[in-house]
Image (cartoon, rainbow over all chains, first blue to last red; front, side, top):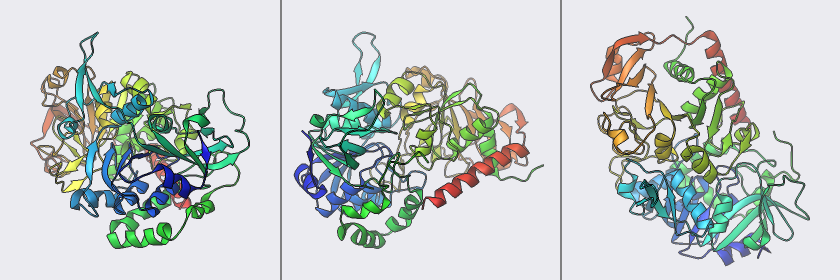
Amino acid sequence: MARISSLSEAIQSAVRDGDTVALEGFTHLIPHAAGHEIVRQGRKELTLIRMTPDLIYDQLIGMGCVSRLVFSWGGNPGVGSLHRLRDAIENGWPQKLELEEHSHAAMANAYEAGAAGLPCAIFRGYIGGDLPKVNSKIKRVTCPFTGEELAAIPAHRPDVAVIHAQRADKAGNVMIEGVLGVQKEAVLASKRSVVTVEEIVDELPERSLNAVVLPHWTVGHVVEVPGGAWPSYAQGYYPRNNGFYKEWDAISRERDSFHTWMKENVLSKGPEVFAKYARKHRMAAE
Amino acid sequence: MADYKPNEMMTVAAARALKNDDVCFVGIGQPSAACNLARLTHAPNITLIYESGTLATKPNILPLSIGDGELCETALTTVSVPEMFRYWLQGGRIKVGFLGGAQIDRFANLNTTVVGPYDKPKVRLPGGGGAPEIATSCGEIFIIMAQGKRSFVDKLDFVTSIGHVSGGDSRAKLGVKTKGPTKLITDLAMLEPDPETKEMTVVSIHPGVTREQIQENSGWPIKFAAKVGETPPPTQRELEVLRDLHAQTNRAHAEAA
């Protein structure tokens, strides 16, 4: 049942040391503010799941919150490497990072299987390549009807899903628009969830009959954090700040410059810093 | 003849390979530039699909990421990522998949995972993303990659997605029914698989490029088809549209900073 709370309270209560956490968002609606709160609260030994780990995972990894990563594409989209992720894999800094590496199709199927309450995901994939050689979770099953060999991997069942959405109503019903990614599946597959939103409104606005809504009884904490997806974007509110994604390349390249940035912009600040990126009212598409 | 860069020749040659009625799964970077150049020139009705779930998108600027708002706002519709991979890709709805990579071998297998051993990589690359299933589920695959000894290698450090595996009928023997890589477009030439051996073979050389140059930038003894053509140079219009697209993109990305 949804509870409207503060961000620190939500992370305090939902995310514990050693948890498996999925902070999802497929380039859109990435829960940056919530990720920063996890860093501030100093969570350790997390297993992070995400199809496309980007800046916020780079930050969590560089700050030593993470011991294991389940993923399918880890980079700074259109820019290049995630330097903190690479430093962890190539040099074990600040700690060793265990990898469970998949393809996008596998990850998307595993979230869907988790949401559907199934133990595993079955799909046509992983044919001929080397990923099954380095990931023992990738198995083959035979279709009992046609004899076709298919790929199987375990369903994702995170302890916690953390997502950002455009808005929720006062009861905690959450509405998502635009590039949807796997957020609905991630929340439904998880035991607990934290949803940050641009705004909490009295009633969800006029919407398509098939709008993507997570009913209040499927979500845990709902927190209003305007701008909370920045530098990713919130469709209808603010655009992706491609310039910051490019700047991150220089900030994160060295351990010192990374730490300085984290200290100034995360450790000594709170979620209110995101408000300056927000638009108070929904704008027309740019 | 217009003055142009090898990279522009590559993008133009790749765009020309696409047809007006193609349904194309687009990767970020070079593939995205080529696909949108095709859409803005000879293939206005091409269907471009990005793995973020945007179907039939018509971006005015090139996206920096695979899920930029621009893609969603100009799309016919946007579906969830599980639906994208299950119904549209695995369901066999995509005719052409457009891929790039860090390393390629003579059978057009691709590596986007690691340079060096997997457990102790020299360079950790982003990983496969959608490529492993794009490579086997799309009707055919076009690959766009600049040539060099470090990227065109004799043996891949890691096979992220398969092309023609070890040549001949080895791809079909794995149970894969799609064609695999039918075109490899580089900054020097166009290659296609030999009908028998499936080794990628030079079929057309870009203007001003020599066979020696192509060989020097390949990590294996490169094969040339019996009849090798010359790639027509970019037209004035192709260059204008491409440069305009890049200029608009740079302007938009700088504004957002």
